[in-house]
Length: 256
Image (tube, rainbow, N blue to C red; front, side, top):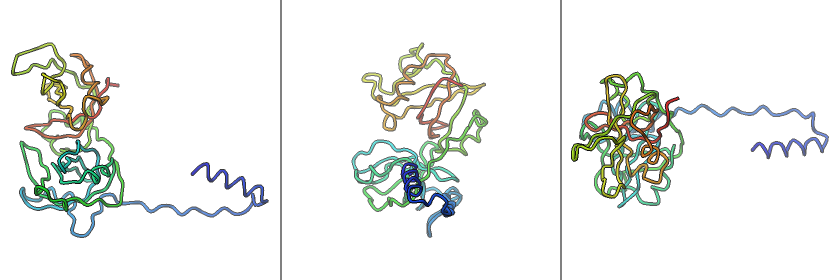
């Protein structure tokens, strides 16, 4: 657009119109990204809904796991809250449209598993997803003040980050191995989820690089494999819950 305007201005000067009044640009109207269509729940209404009830929400894709077998698991958010859409029925063609920021509408059931509040769907219900016009990308929220607090759950499924956390020695229950900064869920072929334990103050959490979100070819997977015990890092991801906070890590780096 900048090149086009520059060229247009040059043409006006050549035509002797350099002093012509310039039109006042019409400002674009501000968008309410939390606004909902008729019949769609606000986040507050969704949050208050009973488990196992039918829900319809609109939100914006912030990330998704790998598509397979006509379904895809999506991390979605609006300005008021976040949603975990577990195994959303979806064609491969529609899955390709679920880029970061894409607005969608889904109908499913509010469910809970191991503390994770999510939306689940009837098997094979390809009407559960509607792709709508609109785009919004959430900024990651600094969640440092909630580290070690039961109030951390209020940020469940949001894109968050923590700063200045320390990498712990990871000890597996199976073999008692020590001296590693991380652990593979499947140590035999090392192509599965990757776990790391991080500490701040008196609280340690186990976080995860979810393989179907960030596989071994991604920068974040490689970065966690390069961690050393005692490293102090900043970490970002989606605040999944599995009997406690289990951040699905999307970025990690040395603490600033």
